[in-house]
Length: 344
Image 1 (tube, rainbow, N blue to C red):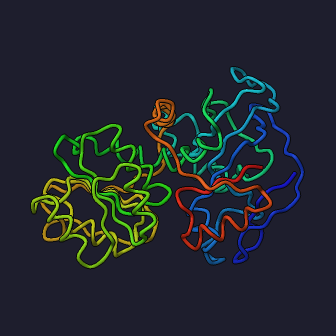
Image 2: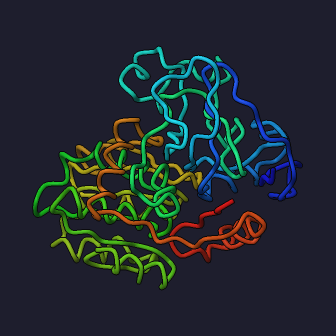
């Protein structure tokens, strides 16, 4: 079968031929219907050799949907031919967090060598993939897998971040979304769907700001040295009750710190490597700062339910598997509008 793999540190992705995997006991083989590209893929592919710890060769793709093709021994409750989304942050299934469906915060995954598909385990950027356990499959029903696949990360991650701040998202409040790309444009829709806040989108790309306005942002601002002042002007000097930074570089975190209101909330979702000092004389009184990771299994169900009622959609650029390297190049260059999806 064809797969998109990272095979040599520093070389980027390649389309290769590999064997079709066989499911072991408790495992499920999916015929992949769609796989999403993510900046996290480039984050790991840009790591130097002394920091890379994800194994080689690595089949990419931590956003996946597929049709059940074959069941390993002992699998129950999963239908051959059924269409499913893959819940990506795999955990041990037994610790306190996993027992709540919060496998994104599993306390034992690292020690047990459990890794997400595409981020250690073989991912969805292939014609077939193995899912380790039936609990990591969420039924898609009649949802279009190509339009839905990115919700497994680009929907779930912002949803998890936003739900954690929901007590700050009261009517009359303002939420700032920094970065209106793959995750940010979905985050804007989630904010509009589950709250009555005013949404301000910030980006350095005019096309992405146009997309932000298209999906529901009330205001759009170009990122720059005066952005925090502009946010305060739009909020009557108060600042924003919640700031969601989907970039996470130092300049965007500086905007977040300067724009957040007293008793506000800053969520650092992007993995750009910036740091936000917090405490007296650094952030306003009462400000909470959080670095969330992915989302829970129950939250993925909720994100898909938002998609079913049309409250959340993903703007996608679709590529065949032979064009996956081109798609990754566009992602790296920042020219993808919304989310790139590979259809094997």
